[in-house]
Image 1 (spheres, rainbow, N blue to C red):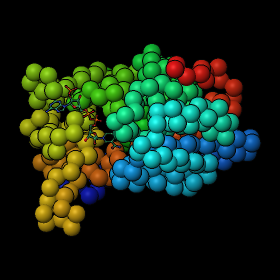
Image 2: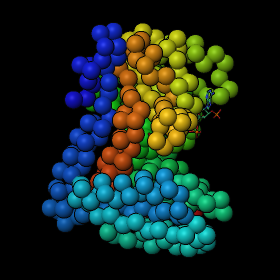
Image 3: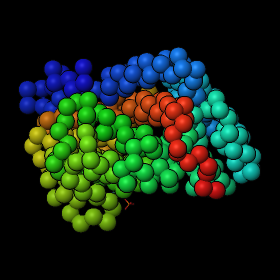
Image 4: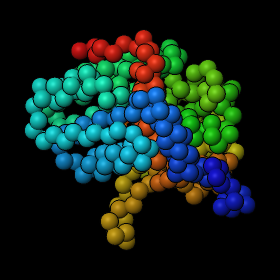
Amino acid sequence: MLADRSQAPAAGAGLIDGAAVARQIREDVARDTKALVGRGVTPGLAVVLVGDDAASAVYVRSKGKACEEAGMHSVTIRLPATAPRDELLAHVDRLNADPAIHGILVQMPLPKHLDPDEVIRRISPAKDVDGFHPVNVGKLSTGERDGFAPCTPAGVQELLVRSGVETRGAECVILGRSNIVGKPMAALMMRQGPGGDATVTVCHSRTRDLAAHARRADILIAAIGRARFVTADMIKPGAVVIDVGINRVEDPSSPRGYVLAGDVDFEPVRRVASLITPVPGGVGPMTIAMLLQNTVKAARLIADGAPTAVRSLA
Ligand code: NAP
């Protein structure tokens, strides 16, 4: 069930169930993996984790588990927070050359003494399943299909497509211009083809009258990292609202002392929108699903001998 309108109050938006869509994608990935294994190629993902950030460790464990469930090969390299630059780069070089590895992801954020841009550029673009390497950023913006789009915005686009949202000609307003979400989201929504062809506006902290832009949106995508920032008066009646934000809000009554909230003030906005993603359970589950999909794509491209640059830019 993708857009579950049955749970919505009479005048409320239907919920886009990200967990259900992510499950479908993971089933598709498992099927594609099986087909590749039949050709003698087991898609392999390597995740490098530097330091002991608790949230990153949880995330990396879920990636490993998801890979194994899909029948993929999974490797996790754990380095201490004090790992020198050369040691990290040597691991990336070794993974670039390893034929059993098709996707490489270095978990961010890195400890302060390491330069994330240098590390991202060192990953072979053909194995950059996070889609952050400048070669893949360029391919996304020129519309070349053999690159990799960053997983979170790719997941948002997939949610829209699988929920039957018409994007062609739609006014799409994106809140946030980060390299991880906002900018690639804009590139995906304006790209030609299914899930694209929208008229895109990107707002950020210097935008004049952000609310006026938001109110024009047929599709509003919020990715700014400010809890409940998007209020009901910023929504055009019947708009589709996608909430990428994940924010901790203090709540002494909760056992953890905090609750998770999106960038959207969910209940009031739900009364105005036609479709909306909840937090949690909306965009969140899509990120790992798209990572697996990118890894299978990388394995297929490499197995097919695609003429993708395999050298890094370093
Ligand atoms: P980010 O790098 O901090 O970027 C935030 C963007 O929002 C910036 O472009 C900033 O504008 C803009 N912004 C901040 N405050 C604003 C305001 N008051 N008005 C207008 N624009 C404002 O964040 P991010 O990495 O893109 O992440 C955004 C949110 O998505 C976070 O809550 C994050 O946790 C969540 N997220 C979720 C997933 C997932 O679901 N898997 C993945 C990634 C991120 P400037 O550029 O002008 O500073």
